[in-house]
Length: 68
Image 1: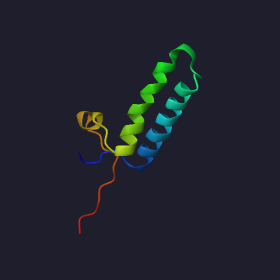
Image 2: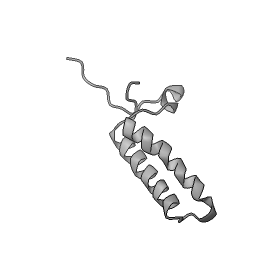
Image 3: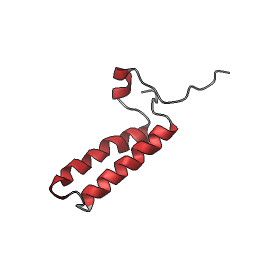
Image 4: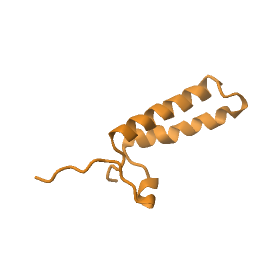
């Protein structure tokens, strides 16, 4: 798995995932608290730097490294 999630994208995914999980954990979304646990997906994709949907869509936000 080559990284395909860039810096800003990773930060946004991690923050969004943590916010959704926190909302679910503190029952801030009421009867829909299970929806907040969907935040695990962006959290994991941000932490690992790989999104399985990106290759299917032809996307890559990871900056290219310069070849020596």
